[in-house]
Image (cartoon, rainbow, N blue to C red):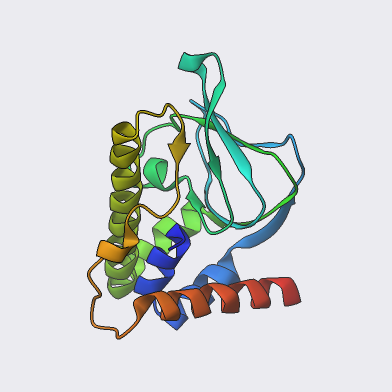
Length: 180
C-alpha cells in the first residue's frame, strides 16, 4: 500500500479538504531539488505524480533510494524539528502538493481532533517506512525502498477495508487537484 494511503486512511474528508484548500499544487521539473540536506523546510510534501531521487552527502551524494507517487516528504523534519537528513531531487516531472509548515502547525494547535488523526497517521507512516528499512537490511542491499513492506501483515483498524477507503481518498484528492 502506498504510504500516502496510510495517512489518508486516518484523516477525515474534512481534514483532506483543509489540506487541499491550504496546500499548493506545484509542477516540479526534472533536476529540481525539492529538499536539500541540512537546509530548513517550509512545507510538508505529498508526491502526487512522478519519481524523485534520495541522496545523502555522507555517501558522496550517492542515490540511496527513490520516492514515487503517493509518498510523503518532509514528515521527519516536521515532527522532530530537525534539518533534513537527505536531499530529494526530481528525476522526472512531478506533481507535488505542498502544505506550508506554518499553516499546518497552526491547524494542529487549533484543532485537537485533526491533530490526533494527523499524528496517528504520521506515526503509522514512519513505522511503515522503518519496517521497510529494517527489511532492506535483511536483504543485504544498500538501496532504500520506500515501497510496501509486508503490508499483508497490517492489522485493520475499525474499517472493513481501510486500503480501499484510503485508495479512493487518494484518487479523489488527485481528481480535485487536477481539476483546479
